[in-house]
Amino acid sequence: MDARLKNVRTICRFVLIAPSTAWLRCRHRPLAIEVATAMTYDPALSDADAAPSYARALQACVGSLQALARPTATVFYRIDASGEPVDFELFGMTAAMHRAYVSRYRPLDPLHPSRCASQPGAVVTLASQLPDERRDTSSYWTGFLRRHGVVDVVEVLLRDGGAVLAAFSLLRLAGDGRYSAPEIAALRAVQPVVEAALLPPLRAVRGIRRIACDVRLTHREEQIARLVRDGRSNKAIARDLALGQPTVKTHLLRMFRKLGVSNRTELVGALFL
View 1 (cartoon, rainbow, N blue to C red):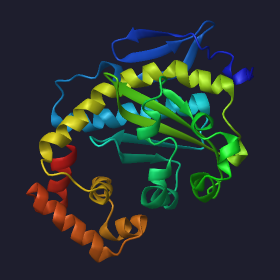
View 2: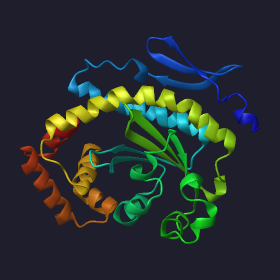
View 3: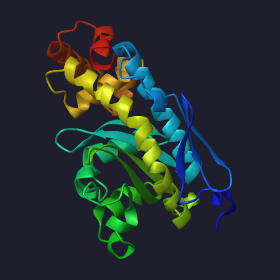
């Protein structure tokens, strides 16, 4: 077994050490992964505090998964009411690669929630959905994954009452090799902790969006809204999404009308605070 993973056992127990700290403990010593703050998420938080709490929990979980499995890139996304992945958070994936996925390859993804959510486990490997012998005839593999140098993908699903609410995609490029069996086992061990850390703040953020936005936004509008929240200018948004600036402005004006707001600050407040 990889020496780095000797302390990562498939049989782990979840121990609350302090009111604001959660650790995974394995047989020999504590695993050096801390999910702070998220485990004691307070449902009575104000709307203004809910989104930052969610962001902190997400960053902690991304760091934990990166320490365990060493993905080259990580993508976190929510699942909307229609079963589509939305509200992507990119960690190490280029905007160009993400655009290619969203614009063309998302329906072909063998790890799309509509395909892997029915799996009994919460950690689903690319090999289980697209075996090696089928890859040369898969346009998703030849046109997307292989073209971008991806050799392996693992999906870590977060369930709420049996339904998949969100997921992480952990991608490996050729230089990093495929995931090993111990790494997959480690992800299965840590998945319940990640799920427990993220679900409460994730539910709160989703609730705020439902209350704030009675009219459904399109996928493109959601993308632009998130970039506005991150402080991106219209010019930067146009560059990131390969759009013209007039198109970005049109989308913004349409969102203003839907939400009954008049500027970018009010837009962010209505959707994220």
